[in-house]
Image 1: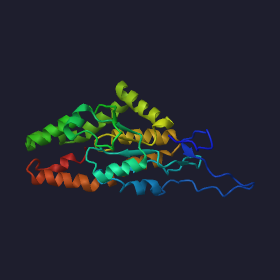
Image 2: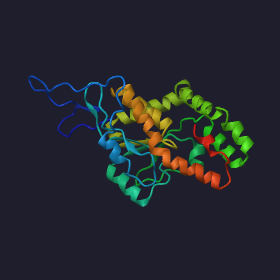
Image 3: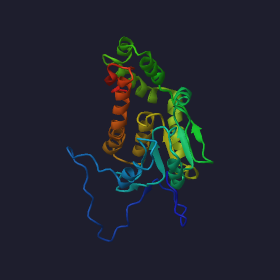
Image 4: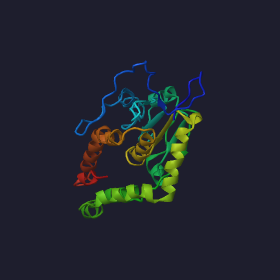
Amino acid sequence: MARASPRSSRSAACSPPPPRSRRGPPPLPRPRAGDGPPPVPAAVAQARDALQGTVNFRDLGGYRTVSHARVRSGLVFRTDALNRTTDADLGALARLGIREVVDLRTPGEVAGDGADRLPPGLSATARPISDTGMYAAVNAAIGSKDPAKQESVLGGGRGAEIMRVLYRSFVGDAGSRAAFGRTLRDIADRSRTPLAFHCTSGKDRTGWTSYLLLRALGVPDKTARYDYLLSNDYRRDADAATRAQLKAAGYMQDPDLLVPI
C-alpha cells in the first residue's frame, strides 16, 4: 500500500522502525490485558475533518504493527459514500492526490443515493459487494411509514440478524470474497495509491476491508478492531440526527429500530 522513496526501489506497506544503535533503544511497551484502547494516530485524527460532505472519512495510516513499524499515512483512506462532497471537498481530494476511488456500493445504493462526486479526471471504480438486500429492505420499511411493518422487519432482534447475515456473507459469498480481495490487491499496487474506498456508511463493507488490510500489515487484532469501532464515534451525531428527522417527518414512530443497522 505504500509508495517507495524516489531513491529506493524498495516497496513496503509500513514505515520500518528506525535503525538501532549497537545497544539499541529500549523496547516499546507492549499492550497488556486490561489496557485501554490505542491512541488514535495523528493521521487518522487529522483526516477526520478533511471533508465536509462525509462523516466517516479517515486515513488508515499511523497504526503500529507487532514489529514496531508504523503503517504509512497518506496512502489509503476509508470513507462513507462520496456523493455529497462539496466544492471544497473536491479540492481537498485533489490535494490528497487520490488516484483511485473504489465504490463498494450496489447499483441500487448508487441509484438511490447518487454517484460519487469527484475531482475532474477522477472516476470511481465500481466494485459492488452485496448487502444481502439490507438497503432495499430497510428503505422499504421506512418508506411505508407503517410502525407494524417496521417492527416486523427491524424489531425483536431482527435488525441485528440482518447485520449478522450481512457479515457472514463477507466470508461465505464467493463474489464478495473476490471483490474484497481485488480491493486489497489494488491497495498493494503502488501505481493506484493514494486510494480511497467506501460503501454507503463506511462502516460494514468498508470496515471489513480496513480490518483485513490492517491485520495483513501486522497491526494487532485489538488495534484493528478499534479502528473498526471508531465508526460508532464518527457516525454517532449524524445517525442520531437522521433518526430524529425520520421521526419528525412522520416516517417512524420508533426510529431506534435502526440502531442495530
